[in-house]
Image (cartoon, rainbow, N blue to C red; front, side):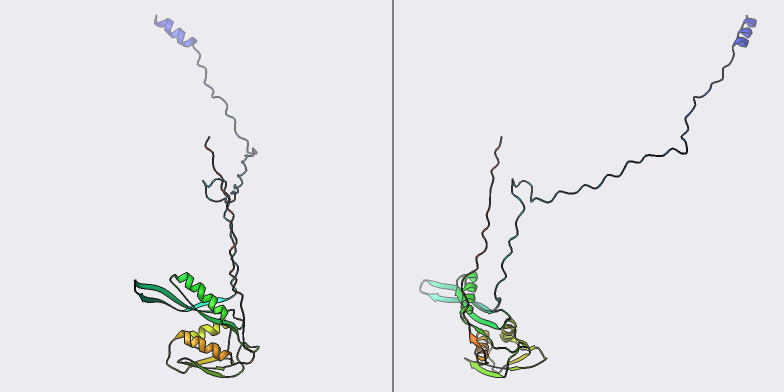
Length: 232
């Protein structure tokens, strides 16, 4: 038996195991790279979502006002009546176009906004055109008095505007330059000081009262369109 086993082992021939050939990548093989995706452009903004078919808001350009405004005094006034006390507001305002025109107005009303509108109308009624030189200065010195306020104004070439209180505000709105103004009394009433400046400027050659249209500028009306969604 042992001899038969030895003969069988001799007849068996070992076959070497050969691995499958692996394809080597050639050195000259070119790698294909996918092109980079272009950035996606954003769609224009069309307003807030959920607003139906409404488009973006339209901007309405407000017309530039003809005159610049400056409130110099605002106070609350109490009037005692038989039924109680009534409150109202008094507003003093200056108007000017920085081209020689300037005016002062006073408005009274229970509402502040309405008092300001009345002051603007009153200032347009009491507006003057100052006779200025080519350098936007005055021709000569002037002095005057209104109520308890006295003022002196004289040209001051090359030194700019030298003034204080309501006088400086009024000359800035009128566009006056190279002028020195002095208040020669102790009065601090800005309304009387402003009226004294108006009276002094009327003494200059070429100064005159002007009329300004009181037509209010209306805002453009906005047309709104609404669309209803029908639930299906």
